[in-house]
Length: 303
Image 1 (cartoon, helix red, strand yellow):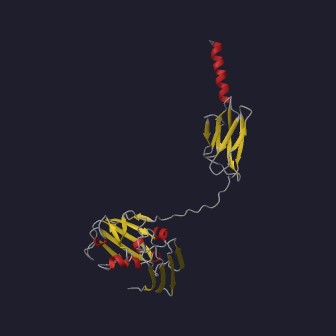
Image 2: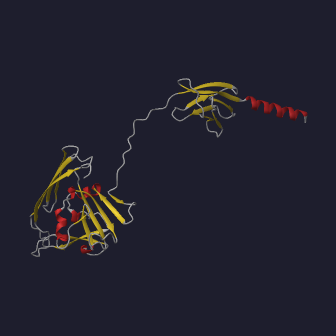
């Protein structure tokens, strides 16, 4: 019994003496608190104290001590003896290049701040159909249907919630427009590159400007010369296999702090007759039109 106690004491004493201790510093001599110190292929490890010091027991099966910390390169040290003092200096890690985080707004957004079921179609969505006028700008929007109301003249009708366009209130910059006979024809006179955004309100909306808002409202916002970022010159060309050609150009100039102006031009040519089914009637109406618009904005202190 006496020899067993002595043997256990010696074994315990040997384990107590198998300690590796030291400090962890950086290249400038500053201590590194919170660094990870652990033996390779084991779950045994410690972290350095506030003064950068550490003390860890050495296992019998591992001789590789790893020291790691965020922002520094890992250091692997081969430890032979059971009791050894280490002064470890970590080298700075590889510096990353500059990272630019760029945000991109979605083409169609749900306006959560509005009490109505309102979607906004931005210029990013409109640019997907760069050829199209207002009547054709809803091709990629599943909630608004566009159909021909008169195949001979090419006039289009917008349907919202499955009902005819006569129940949709059309607004241009919050002003009622395209009423009555102008509703199927006026949509073709608003080129897509002229529009800044479209707001679509589905369901019963405000009827203070008219009774048409039974199925909803569609408001069109045009490019505004008074915006801070509005100082550009742009051009747009389009051609299709049906011999449809379009050209758009717009320029904005800030004359002074209060005065700014925009010039927008549009040309459309679809004069070739198409009769794909040989029934004696053309399939696509022949159209040729020119549109020029000059906008002026005065931003005063009270107006």
